[in-house]
Amino acid sequence: MPTDVVPEIPNQLRAAFVRWDNGSRQRQQAMAWNRPAWQATFPEHHNLLATLPDRLDRTIVAQWGAGAADSEAQAVQAFVVTMAWGYGPAGYGPSRAARVLRENTQAPQVLHEAACIVRSDGGAAAFAWLSEHRLHRLGVAFATKYLYFCNAPDTPPALILDRIVQRWLRQHADTQVRLDWHVGDYGRYLTMASAWASELGIAPDDAEYLIFSDMLSEEPGASPWAPPGRAADTVAAMEDDETSAVLEAIDDAAASFAALPGVSPADMDDFERGVRQLRRIVLARTN
Image: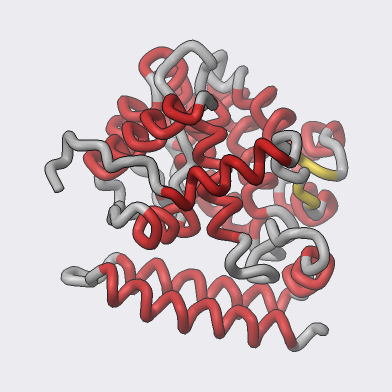
């Protein structure tokens, strides 16, 4: 398919929109997070973390992202809050976020500049700039979370692109996008999601949320974003440090496999079926 042709809106997305619309357009549930662990890892941000609620939602995180372009200090604060939301109760979240800041002396400048670009020029421009000024240990999934929350409402969108969204696009839109800082793939994803959102009469980030939640509904209990009924079990497992270490290793293996040259969509489907089964086995040990 030519890169400038937007695929027709998938029936799967239409169905997800109808369910969401009929359900009063419920927003994504707020995420629990481990305040003491984050404060212990980031003592310099103890007071910031103390002001946050016990559960973080997109609206709260966006309030911090809105100030990221004002200064390097505020950009770092927005990054920390975004990571707390993104990792949720995962035991390894604070240490992973800390490594990004502590292993990149230029992190405050890079985060600030990326926030300035995304607020003035939108997600595609900011992603392209960040791909040339990467921070060690910050991958596409969490970098796009940061850009999303720093984006301004009157500029082109910056949408989250992680493995859940990637898998949905492959399975339901016959579209392969990489998570290896491929600028063209991210721009194509933004174009598709924006076009589909326009057809449905919703905002682009609503389309991203529908994609995310629809894919997640196919594998309950496999993520801290799990639907009600399995969320408590998943959170308990994620708070177990040993379990977290195993889940982290599984995530790393999936990311490494996806980055191998010559990996086809069929290969990824096969590999991720195994990954989902492994995650279920790990999570089931706590039940």
